[in-house]
Image (cartoon, one colour):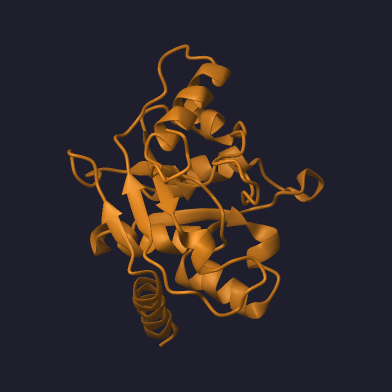
Length: 214
């Protein structure tokens, strides 16, 4: 009974997200990934992974788990239900002193089950005017731990304007989720080189708005 209820809630969230944002997916010429991967995206809202998850084809959606902060998704019964039961999120303790496990080991273990992951390499929501915050080392360390997994850049556009910080009621706007071609960690590739390459791949997907000077 609980499984049916959870599935119904997941469907409702997908329908609501699509209705409010009119979200559409933009895929590369090669189309959606056909095998397990790590999606890495820009991060400006708690709803980011929901938007990515909602545009994935159903067969991909059921095999994809978001990586999220345990402090946020465990802070209330509702958050726990949505994060753990509905989305089966991989919860990471961001406070190093409270960690019982290495986050890379946790994520690697999930990948070993055949699941794909949604990861935000900035590590926290970007509330600055910059398009991206500097990437933390997690994406590199995970790619190094499981070098055979494809890394797919994903740019989410407009969601921070749909749900501005401090607002309760979303503002209807059209959002896009743009997927790029997959990357892989090259043999002996240095962390700084890889993170710069991953950053550039993600920024290349960002829409060129008026006033960008690009």
